[in-house]
Length: 259
Image (tube, rainbow, N blue to C red; front, side, top):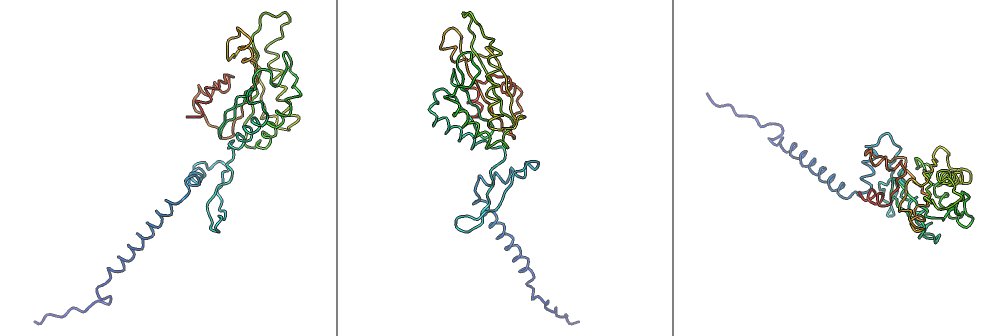
């Protein structure tokens, strides 16, 4: 019996070319995607990741035109970021001429200011000094500008222990009155939301230096302001206790900010 000849298929036996072409196209798309991701601005990419990770927050990523007309991904100012507040206050301190009497640290989550000795008040007085009121006013203006990013502003008053004078003023009351004087200025004059303001007087109970001489006592007389961001997170109970207890050691904050 004669062998029957096989008829050639309609595709001419080249069906594999379609599959091969599809695979090449997918590989090309894959490498284009990799190249695109490698050229994305790292900071903007992190902002995009935070947007998805913090779905409960109001972070936004928008598309804005670049200088060359291309559209580039850019993030708006992040709610709760105190970086610009830190920069404004740092500038205010330098321009005031009081930098020798003020200690200051800050980052995107906290801003800490320490007014030393009698910068804001005369001895045994809780009345704000007229020659430094403009300085406090400038700082309050910055607080007001970033009020929506602030969780709270805590003002702490501290005094020095003096046992050799006749008319002893209550150190607890004096430190509380001074903290409240700053608070009331921020509330009444700068119109900052009262619920964001906290004042505490610690008296002589948290000294920074021994009270054996005037140098140490001057170091201990101080008013401190701690500003906390609305997105501040701290899971370490010991650190949180230090923040809220009044133990505002400048070295502790420097260490904390560098972590």
